[in-house]
Length: 471
Ligand code: NAD
Image 1 (cartoon, helix red, strand yellow):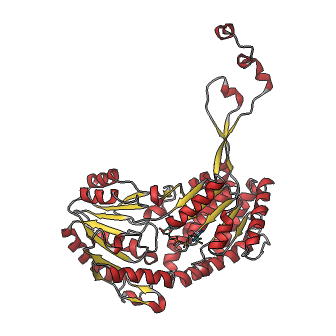
Image 2 (image 1 turned 135 degrees about the vertical axis):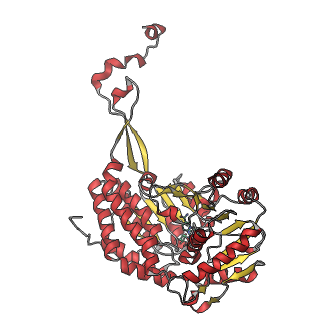
Image 3 (image 1 turned 90 degrees about the vertical axis):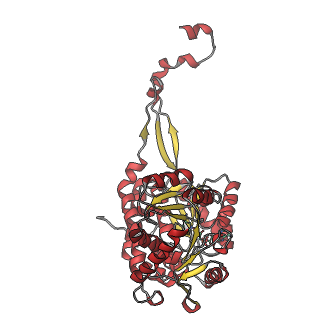
């Protein structure tokens, strides 16, 4: 970028319930006045966002490390680089995305100047969770700014270091007539949800997703719900264990298992279970040569409440913990743990684990594995590890999920042109890249007729007569 005009907009965080209405009204005003819709303003805001992320990436990483033990390499690879790249992509593409599109209709309506314009729906609310607090705030924010919408961001109260850091940065770099942050917990979110929005974008658990959807219904506000669920990993008998075990365990260990698209559990035959456990032991040694407790590559559980939940699962499971199992409350460390011979009704198979625990459930066949998945909520992601295209298609065709992935884990999120979203209980709506811009805009049908065309359209006028139709 050649120019840089950071706004002087530090205003401090809005905490009080009274100011929620005020902030919302101010942003409504920006929108009504066309302030945020102006294409130059959108591009300027996106550039400032890119500068904000680039100039403060180390500060942001430090906050992620403080909250989640997220190391430099992991934070940059999973959150920071993608946010900067997506912002730059939006700067380059927003004019094209926002350009009116011609439509081809038949003569004579083609003469009426038909056009589709993608226009902003109004003030956007983004409610983000704690596990990838940067990416899950900034990625929707990029599309909302590009769409011409003013934005209210509600960060998670659980990732408190990150929330404080990003709040300061946003208020320092971005125009308060375009983006505002409201921090707080349930009372603040409840107050925000009472306002009328053009679109609500929520990422988090399904229980709160229902609260959001309910509040949105009051104003008939469209929503995107990015939820979670138990994402299965089918390991077929022909799987290339040397490669896929690394990918599977990397997917599970990333962010200490606190990833919405993390492989939640494995389905395989009893014979494959034994081979997989042996392969996991080897990979474990490769990933953590100094032992996982001392490793600089493994994160921590977000808070004491979640630490209690995760260790409780390990205590209550009736499966066999064959790898890991150790924990330390002093820094909320729970080792990556592999649990075999887990039954369908085990405590590990109830809710999404959101933890560094990988249960293995054995099934007699791939057909039985498909039935197992079909009998549960549709997952956000589904993984199949096989060398066979036939097996892959059998599983893809037999199931529903937000994404369906062969021989990989998590990588689908990094493909910007793929939709990112769920189906059924794992959410609705999808985003990333241009889709995020589309999400916060609607297609406005435009006609630009000329009065001199009147002679072509007189047939429509009364008095009606059969004679006119025959003429
Ligand atoms: P969380 O506890 O941070 O909650 C998410 C947001 O909801 C926060 O901003 C929080 O303040 C708000 N909130 C909490 N309780 C509320 C209430 N009663 N009323 C209104 N708002 C409330 O995060 P979480 O829900 O624990 O996040 C983990 C879940 O999110 C997992 O299920 C995970 O799979 C899912 N997730 C999904 C995606 C995705 O892209 N689909 C990404 C990350 C996480």
